[in-house]
Length: 418
Ligand SMILES: Cc1ncc(COP(=O)(O)O)c(C=O)c1O
Image 1 (cartoon, protein in one colour):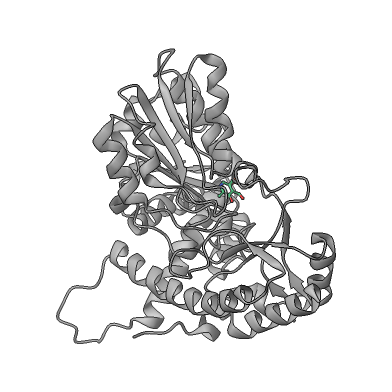
Image 2: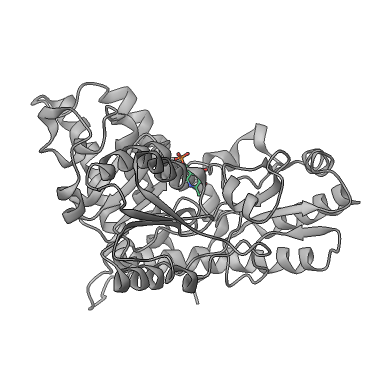
């Protein structure tokens, strides 16, 4: 079995060599990850050499356009979707805002949508707001103890009037990984429904094979998958064709502009290809191809699957250690499942005997960068009766995290909890 070469991985992230960050354990990755050097290099090069209007017929402009095109091609291939199914927008929240407006034009009063109570507000609020326009909102509730969604509960919510189902691949406060492909199949067997999946908290743990998941629309934020501050969404071609234009009227025929009323951030779109370059570098390092190999080289979708496994195996080892330690503490409430096989390493906690502020300050004193608050995951927290004014403590890590950092975290928690 191939193991992740952490010194190699960390050499790809300039933050790990930055003196001012030395000694600090980074455990707020769910808020935004460190950026890989490939992305920083492209940004630097774009701003230095090609910061002109793209797609004109002179060299700097042509290179700028080619750099942007590469991001569509490269990321579509890793996500196993068509190049014309990839959209870059300012953020996932903005992408969902635009989508909610576009879909509303397709629906009649009395049509129904199902929204989960496990979502970050960005895949919840804009859909729920459509109630004011005559759309019926049905909520898929979470279990009040575990915060988990039960796919069987969906059956009672689906009807011939259901037009859309919105839920997360993984909640940014519960951490449970939902069985997306099963849920999509269940929903589609019952109704002619468009399925919108928020993958923001999942994708940083390995880019998903969106084609295999079957979601009609899948969204994630590149600034959490080691990249630039953009939202990426995939929209199945037939849905894109049916959606009404949300951009300028004269751009209605351009798929890249139809759902993007904001002008594109050219440099950041170009830099998104750096995420694919990073994955290439990790793949080539861990799965070198013998010079005399007879079989064809793996394609990007296959590479993506192998890399996801590699990242998640490492994350699961660290998660097993951390969860084992957390489980033997009677002075904390762990949010979400305590089985490392069922969840992502985005762990929310509630101290029982100490204030959150005190524990957070104790962690900071031990050079742990953690998160505190509701993280816009207010509906799942409310579903578990957790006050959103104080929120929870969040500890989240990625494949670049080391065993030593987990020990530092456990030491920090031990001293902060007392
Ligand atoms: C699960 C989840 N969904 C959506 C979002 C919103 O993403 P963006 O900041 O790109 O709008 C976040 C951001 O933290 C998130 O964690």
